[in-house]
Image 1 (cartoon, rainbow, N blue to C red):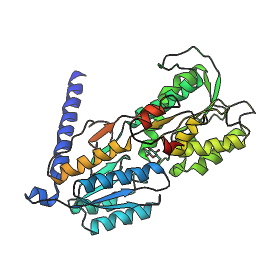
Image 2 (cartoon, protein in one colour):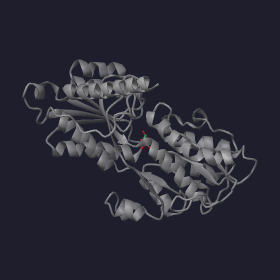
Image 3 (spheres, rainbow, N blue to C red):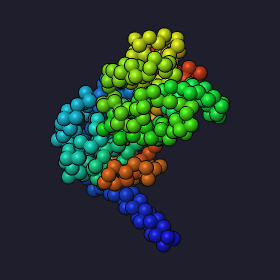
Image 4 (cartoon, rainbow, N blue to C red):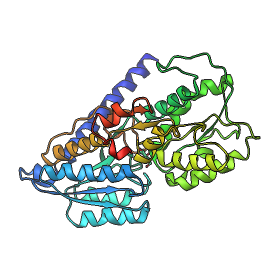
Length: 371
Ligand code: BGC
């Protein structure tokens, strides 16, 4: 057993070393490798959609920070349409970009366009969402996505009074009726959020403190394709009809846009705005922060996309200078072909109690933005 274990470790370290080497060698692009300069190089930035504020902020942050370093930027949004994103990336490659930063719509649909990038030695950074089934992804920067799910579930439990503000069990026995939502099944992050949330909620489901009236506790049942608010609203409306008229106490929602749809379904289903179930979220979007301040949505998860942008830009800049970008995780994000070296950032639970300190005092929003 020991020998097997040691062999495993040796294999793992060889993998890590070769990963690092791989990442480094494709790094600088032709110019840097030949001692030339990538100064002022054009960088392609592909974002999924402008339907959600966070992606607009992501795109703007990455663009302006790259421009501050003297790069030219081709920033494109794909309206959540996969063929559009593929052709935008093709155009970027044909337009001479020296690096690609990509937040994918569907993490598995970019393989052939990325082969083109590889043939031209264009390094690829997966932004926030992992790109799957491709050996061409050099680096990944994101938040600790499983921890985001843990935080969502923790805030649900806190809102229900099962946990106190310090995260200690209060002894509340429930049973509390809750319904569960997950993100888009083609977004690699959605499973991480779900797994983090379910590992946190499972003990309470097992002990009967939490009950799911619909019985829909599988990811496939809870998932909302393309993260569409209307789809979440429709599903919530359906779920309200299966609860036997019992009051719902909580809803696990993985994204603020879905939370807005869920809250609409709840209010049209007879819940008063000042007596809603505990509804979670993610992204600290303005509409949801306002809803939190108004006492409707209970929580969101704040992921500072300024920091994510900075990280992606630092990676691009290192690659353009022929240097190796810093990573802090070489184990978690296996895309089916390789474990992609990653830099993970931390997220934070935000409720009405701490939004000022987290969002306003840090300059993420002004008081006026939230009025
Ligand atoms: C992001 C989340 C976002 C979701 C919907 C995920 O990939 O990590 O921050 O809420 O997409 O846009």
